[in-house]
Length: 310
Image (cartoon, rainbow, N blue to C red; front, side, top):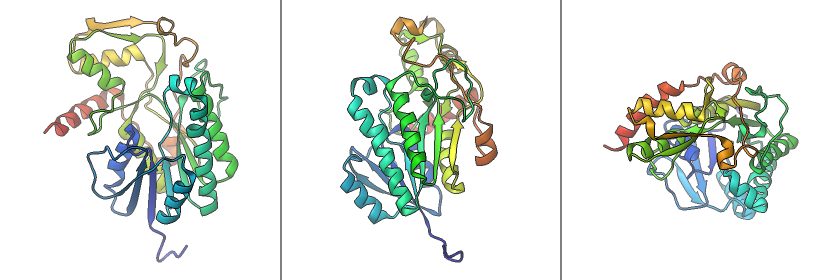
């Protein structure tokens, strides 16, 4: 690379219509020194359409995907596209393998071939939840097809020898302009505001990850060309029930509508890890990642919701 005329940073973002994909788009377009190309299988859904190009593309169509990579010439790929539903992964093993394992393996091979840096999104579900919180090198033992597929993808990516950052994350929440995208916080807030009773699991523990923090972590891996596995989450562990109680407390909603249930009550005692949570020292040290506390994020989300409705 010519140090006087370095190659401009060109990011190909997959899964751009997804929750994280839309937030990453919004974060990246604010950077003046990046060129961004977004792609998704469905028509563009992000209300923010300025400052980047968008291509509707079935990522399983390797010819079209390869053509896009050849034409755009990315220096970096942020791969957000995935089949993330535990139940869909169980019910559609072929599609799960195609989207969650074969596709990232193909992208990693193309990254190796073209000296592209790859950022891949993985999950706390690579762990069985018996001994969290976890460091990056802790033994993996997924308890569902989704976790297995993500672990297999991690292994496939690392096997190519491409320059890659693997970001594992937990229970992503927050708000984006696309009102059709929901998550734990918005689901609980909207249901309770509508005076609807909700069932919330009391015996699963997580460190929820604010989508703004996760998008920032993706940007940091690009800026630093980081390589290896990184754990990205907040630092305080909550039961799902405790997190929902905090949501109710912040927006002053009726907590009597919250019904405490066990994972066994909804058939999740075996196919969801009981206690995850991450030790994020490596991400803080090497990426400069600084997570936002859950309760602090709720006040920012409140303002974001107000800004989006004006």
